[in-house]
Image (cartoon, rainbow, N blue to C red; front, side, top):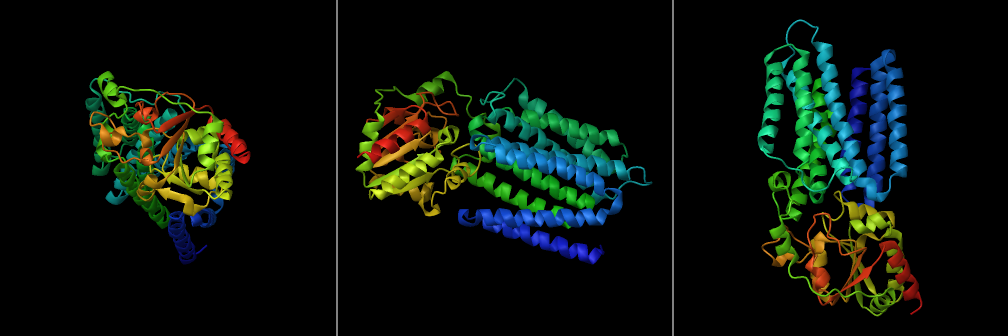
Length: 463
């Protein structure tokens, strides 16, 4: 394949990636965007396969069968509750691949006389450093989300000093390579120190902040891939990596803003490591908890004028999104106005609740983001909270001693009645008590969310 033809086809691939990102910005067109992006990636792989000639096509084919087979099976079998873990895992694999490419490229060019050009050597060391951090950090994020390790921040004395020493060691070896020291072991040390830094960088971050961490590590992977494009002189990698890096960075900033916290506070604040005094302040004096039966709640819902569903991670755990949609359709058939209030950081990854409800074919116009949903609660008869906790905690507004004070929340306590579906009174992922559960307007419907909603559907039908 000629140089001009391959570049033209690569340009088409770049256009498909841009279009895919554009379509992914709207839930109504997200599936089409995914299809366009996938088609562009297939084209890029085919062009690359033809360009490398007969020397490596079989290796590419074997890698495609292994990687493609694993990805297809994993994507089809993964449950929605495990989707954040899969995103973290796949993102980490991308960062690790970028680091390995950097190592392979340095190994290829070192036997040649003379130091590599500074742009190539700079791309190699930065790709290795950032990619290794992204890989290791994503694996820790995966382990936290999978509950292989505790979700609470893991800190120790001298943590900042150790992290700083590791980063300086990685950076020092990288600088030596760029300066012209032709020793491959320097890049090995850079990668090893970066891997250790990535682990220690994410360990002190609480599980409740994982959505922000995942989007940040996604940006890291995009940047590492773009730098790999400079190493290999491949425009597709450069553009695709920068698209991922830029979108991941913007998403990180938006997620942090949604929690009214800086990115630095998310990364270095050890949020979730709550002292006993702070926990007592956050929890307040408690009070009486009112529980209700499914029959009681069904009456509230059936005779309401407006009902707002507030989904959280518990909805994903129970796999109850289809049941919620069935209940919503049933209420609408009785003349009830139904909508869904979506908090930006509900769940375990960016857009988790949107993806969950889209799987159940919930109409997109019914999904209301926080700024649009909050003014509606004052005229809402029943706010049905399904598995959400921290994103509806009124201490974020009212209690300056709470660890989440200042975080924008869904103002469900403005509704006339709040119904909370929970398994127990255990606190949420951030480990903070929620005074909403003791509010006189709140009733608790205890049990598995799927079983509770199934009971509600049956009882509403009988009214």
